Length: 433
Image 1 (cartoon, rainbow, N blue to C red):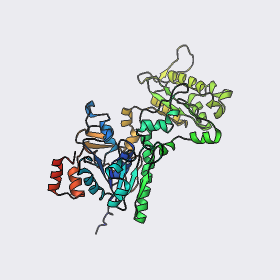
Image 2: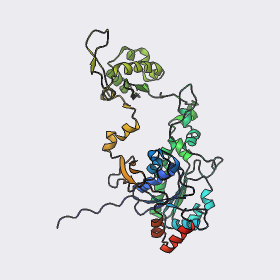
Image 3: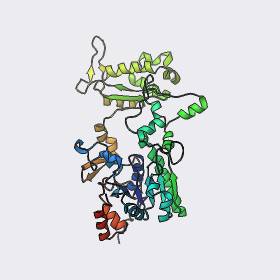
Image 4: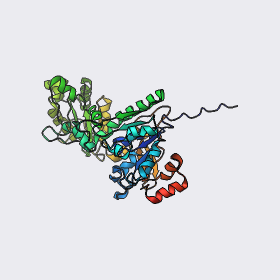
């Protein structure tokens, strides 16, 4: 008989069911890691008070629609979605019946919100003794700031990021997106996975009091250490860096930008070779890295001139003769050629890509980063996959983000166990609003 192929491996979180109350960025991304690796994640919302991110664009055809937010869709693929009116007399009890069937509960409300609905950890434990619950508000469950509400833009200021973003002579700027929303979920996911492993070994659940504020601080590089050890307050440097020179973005003639970051003497030697070893590179004040850190404006001046003068538009001839200069033709480079040239000499550099260019990036295509999923409202759209690939059990985006209440019938009849009559009666009474 021919040898039978081995059975497919179970996904890491197959058999785990998650009740996901978390909103906006951090919480939904945490549960999405589980969903993409096999867990059944059920988003719990209300049509009378839907998830905030559903109101955030971009929207299909620029028309606001609770089921047409690309932002919400990207954070909630691979999940199911239900709606329950918590304020209806029968709403909380229906949710409790669902929680009794869930291994994990995630939420990111301000402290006390879950308790007001009767869904705090101690209450849920009565339904499911081995449940794992993670709360992910901005500042944790205790302390003078615990009840402050806000989003990632608020948190990045409180956590010190805005202090470092901006120009030396200007005010704090912050980032264009809620930067901490894309940093903090990694810490929360690790904590949740550790709790799942603990339950697997001991049979016991636990409560995770997770502070986005404390997790975000880990992204501040050496700033706090520098202050506590040296009394030195790091601050805004524009595009410059404390450890690298040059460290900036330079505009090419075609309007595109190239970034360069030279942290070591080897990087600097490679840059000099790529530039043809101009005289300014060998000036005494450019010989050591610590000297170049103090000469970043001078370096920027020379490199800005080089990029303006030695790059060309795609339509220009590859070889050009500088007007009034005798000798062989001077080589001009397109933006792509500049990057290839510098990288061939070991210079860390890259092109500043637009969203369109990112979507067509060959490296991301090779890695299958983008997934195509057919959404009932938005049609065929692109979704981000996890940034890592498990060799034996890789992630799989199994379905597009749910429409509001899309899976009410499946979840409450198949998971909770409502009869057809119960489901219809509750729907008529407005419990699923």
